[in-house]
Length: 490
Image (cartoon, rainbow, N blue to C red):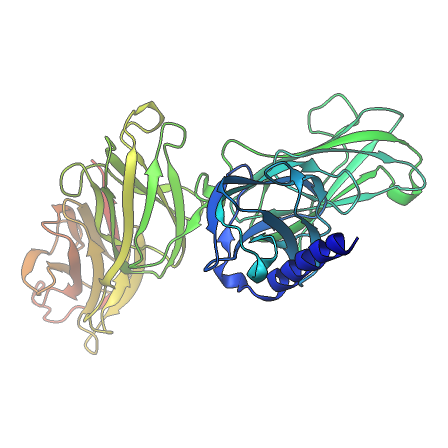
């Protein structure tokens, strides 16, 4: 009896020491079904591992002595210091917890020590493994993706609650199927703010009363709650058993679809992978009107032939590039943002879904400058397709306009008299105010028109609306006008 007391006292001393003397921040991560090795001796009498556990999970923990005289003990401790399990036997050469149910969603510390802790004298190499056996179907359990739970809805328990953790970009299918009785399943999903984000009475397009929420997009990291109930909830009358499942879709994951686009910041490169399964990645960023951007998609390895596409907030394509960068890299250079708002980037490969290239790439967006930097405030900004009006008189003999053009753009400019005796004249200039073209009467009837002009470079251009100072003996003509700037595609 005295010997048993001494053994128990030494073991309790070991647990007390294990519970009190470890730094949680120094714990080694422990993952399900991944065995991890360690070594204990007088200099290292214990090792600590940490596992992210969920409420209701059943786990099996196995601690084995691989070599030496080591007599190990295993203590499982919650983050608040509560001991969940402890032992020093169960196997001929180690400790075995065959089915341990976790009481809460928490961090669990697995403290491996030698018998007697600091007072012990054994040493040797060990191996620790934690396996997830499943999750309890009890209301309040915390689920992981691909879990299945079964339970019963009746008047005594008209609702059951299950939580799960999700990250922004996850896309989920959640289904609740009746397995007995006349149950009419009803599903709801609530976020951490207790706001209902999805609900279902019947699976869309289905022929049963089963409930299903398909394609649920998670827009923020956090913990979510599934409410499994029946139509009418507390006031409902149907009863029976059900099976509840939660799964990720094939396109789940941040950046895999436009609705789950990853956030991208200027001058902050992102490294990602194009694979056979995921041939495209989506990113989003906010830009101000007239920002001049450079976007680079550079291959880092593999056979990838990068291909870039810029989309507006309606997901309409506004620019594409295949080989604008060095080698086969994609690059959008000197792109002017047309309006302030949200923009999307599609980083993919040449020939898209029909392509075969794979590999890692680096994506970078840089704001190079403001398009109208240095342009006088007196010059009104124009966009292609813009129509403006003005008046030429002795006080205002001309008006100056500025627009951003891209090398190779073909433009047309017209200045049409609206009233008075104005003899319209147009001047087109580059960013240094070097004259590119002047026109007086190409529009007919003393109207000016530049029918077709191809821009020689990318940058700022100026248009001056003015009057011909010598018209049929009338030195100064006057009147209002209509000015149109258009891009031609013929």
